[in-house]
Length: 385
Figure 1 (cartoon, rainbow, N blue to C red):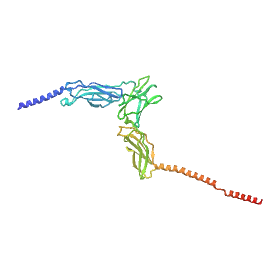
Figure 2 (cartoon, one colour):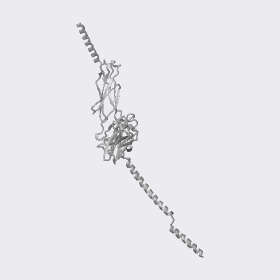
Figure 3 (cartoon, helix red, strand yellow):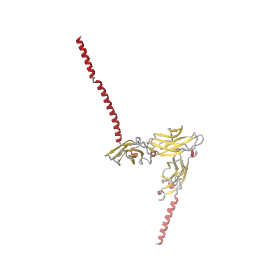
């Protein structure tokens, strides 16, 4: 009996050692020829690699790859698990790029234990031609009413008088990077660019590069990445209307700004003023009700502005304020006064003309009497003769 127990223990130890030994025998190599490529799309970068050196026992297994990448100064890595041999993403080319990758062997191919290879690394850095003082400053891009992109900048701090800048852009869907054809200029120098008809550019990374040229020194390029829906500045609302119902409730209405932005994408900020007091409210609707503070308010006015809301963008830019609109009673009173004054003047003028006409048509009784008398005298003299 004791002999059987010893045999069982030995058998268990033997099986465990065999399994461990079999597991240790399975190794997987890292991917080959890992590299970071710049296809000239202003920050849209390709990361690609080749499969690891093949192992006969792994021919029937599908390998996975764990890819990590980041800009050099970033504190965190982005991690992707993929079966492909490439990956694409946007990077800030003002900074260096680094990545690393390793092979994953699935559990079903390694006796239930996941096996990973060592890491292989790669990096990429654009050439830093030109000093930092030659780069443009204060780059600002606004997508007006989701129709026209306007970017503006200032020249570098220390550049020669002949320095001029050019802007290129690219987003997924274009075959290659394009140059701006409608520059904003000041003293014949490019200080901005206006782009229109950017079809299918929403909800994608929009890459911009502004470089420059000078006969005296190289100019450092600047790179930017935007999502256009996050920099939209809409038009202000129009057709504002305010009414007072039941002498207590105030109803304010306005129309959706014109343009391609869907009505569901708007949020509004309203400033309402009653006499010397004012309130600020935010709503996604195109109307609002509130109660008057006093029944004898003499000043009831409001104005409103719009912005793309959180359902259509991560951020946005407030529009300009609309014109202030006040309670219609003032408009009606002024209209009545303006209407009454010319009507009164018309009636006065009409009465004056009527008096002149009547005065001309009425005969003079004194004159008629003299004419009749002269006729009678004349007839009498003829009779005497």
